[in-house]
Length: 204
Image (cartoon, rainbow, N blue to C red; front, side, top):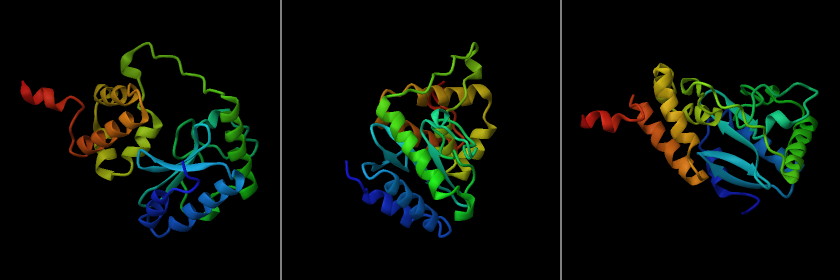
């Protein structure tokens, strides 16, 4: 895997004008913190990997996000982590460079995340809910749906059981490739207001 991925260049180029300098800056800081890190695109977003996902960034219409894959394992004395593991938005809503913590803090968090992957540390799995209806959609899926305002709005209108059906389908994917394909399909269906099992209901 290459240190720099041309798909990330393309992602930044097609992002909103306000986001471009912030994405470029974050990319620069990541590589400054860890020259061994590599880039890729997962679920439509730029990811920075070293022995597994380290961090990721995502641009939306009016804000962007930067997150750490294992945020809960990071030592964060400055209290800049606002969302948990696998979230695109660990640092909260970003609309300008002023919304970011200092470069020193970012570099420290990135290097911590790399060390965590080096050691093979795992995020503790959350207990399985006693009731299936309480299964929450993973944050990375919510972030993915947020790329399309129609999709995220439709998903929010779904009943808890309809949300759970999509969440289970995404979580049960065995590989990243399968998960990404399912998320793309889900985005398309949800934007059209379709539930997970809409095909079967049509056949009745």
